[in-house]
Image (tube, rainbow, N blue to C red):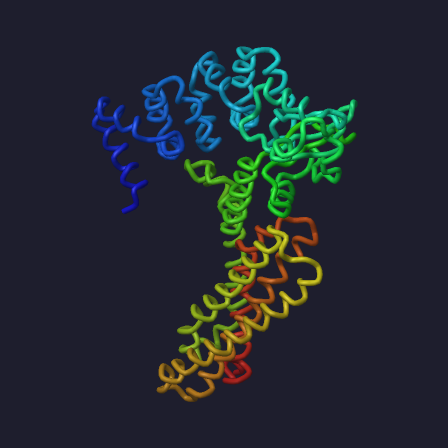
Length: 453
């Protein structure tokens, strides 16, 4: 059992027993990150209880490391004065991520109890969409002018309270437009009288405030940056997206893709209670039910084939199952490749050819093995060799069709501007089942003459 699991079990045990003395002692042994991970998995009552046991100076750091949904639940249950005092010690981008998940009434009550300047800054950030650069940026950064000297800039750096993750000094013109960037290391290595314009990097990688957060994360990873400047339509520097927020975006986007592929919503929080889970999943399961009904109706015309060769029914699950697995594998590879930018235009054709070839090759291998088993199972039948051939070719055909559908469907959805992650849900699995079984029974009618009479 992992150490994290042991801690979690021990914490639950102490909470259940009401042993406050040992609980306090355990909390002192955990750092803020460990405490946050423990609180993420507790009920809201237990979260508030443990937060109340912590020293005041530890509460904000713990809250900042929690999942934003869990932190928002805590904030929503606190009195507005307590919530405002707790949030006042957090970075603005973290505050926005938490308050963005609080209802409007509670939000207004909390903002009214913050300093006016802070409340106005937060309202500006909250106006941006959650999944844009503006929604995840921090308004705190350090900037200087191109004509400033190294000595002047260092004096300014020492005179202000720097954000925690400052790694770059941005260079702006008198209008606030971004014209360059320098690393802090450069200021340490340069002579005091040198001007910033002499060593700044004039070509700056930046993003517009309305850029999608996934595009921001992609640029940060491609250019190996620890912060990304955010500009408005006039190239005025208004904020910075820091690397810890990028990590959150990458995790969020990966989780969203995985959940959508399973037809289980967009966020893990959707699965934490009954009714949200029901609302998220019923549509996808409804689509699967419709697809299954269509499949049943389509296969009903082959009832005579099953009556003449009952052994055909034995291999329906394996034909559908093998095809479904191949379709899921192909669609998952394509969806993830599209998400991380791996699939560029010139690679699409190679990918389709490779996946179809893999599906056909695997279909031939497993079709042969399953066909040999069909020979033994159908030994008492009229023509076991033909049955084996039908099963073998049916598996191969089903898996090949699955590779085609699983590869092409996400690509077509992406071309149409639809999130391709939804392709690996009921659409691919149901269509693969229907086409694979129809092909299987069509082949049986041809090779066995089943249902011909």
